[in-house]
Image (cartoon, rainbow over all chains, first blue to last red; front, side):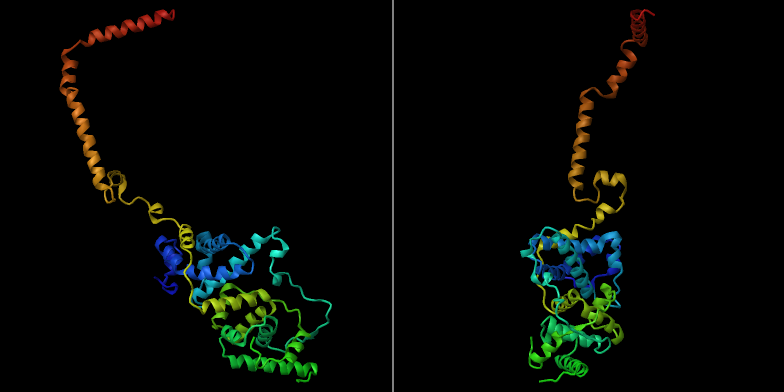
Length: 181
Length: 170
């Protein structure tokens, strides 16, 4: 089976049927996985998965392959870019399907959660933490992700995540005069 | 979550803090993909990370995609590929006829050339047989030349026309 990185995108963007068929066969496992994962939080049906996947392909070939032509292999791999496009398309599909018809019990709790505005929080001054430090703290505390997961995402080793986290907390404690236990 | 270096005190501290309202910069699909692959410079990555840090949906997307891209993927349902393939037309439909009408009529180069040729031969044989049984051109010619004379026919025509006009009172 042809791999995605073996697809000739210039031929594909001309509307060549054979190239399109090859591209579809090579890309469906990825599109399927991304769409399925994205829709899993929305509790949609199998038919929705099929329709959302179809939406991805419609986007790619619409208007004479306009979206596909924006892809630049020098900037990102085709698989990664396709995954991002598929995710975005699937989220749009889920939002359209959910509009005004979903009972509140069917909406995932995470989608309904709102920040408790009554709790006064101390503002972290801009520039106190780097973007990466903020991101790592958000993943570790707000998303409750594992250090290994964050390391895999950021393409760094787990020890770097731990040390970035440690330095960020030192800065916060120093700024807010907190004592570590 | 790995808690080997993350204490409850750390967590409580973080929960008492709030990041300021930061305008989330626009991130294109291509930029996001490049960031996921770790292809960006530190400055470029910082811009994306600021956006991801302020947007819970982007944080979930980044984590989901990172996981999916790093694992073997199961096969998709065949129906998914069939439907997607149907979005782009067939070359045979889109291409102009390349062999001219005669070739397409005779089916030359196609998969049904032999049956078509047999049918055409049979049709020609039947036509010839019918023509021969009917006497052919020779008998028609003889009738035209030596049969009833043309003057009789023309006088008959003339009489019919006169009767027609007379009936209309002309």
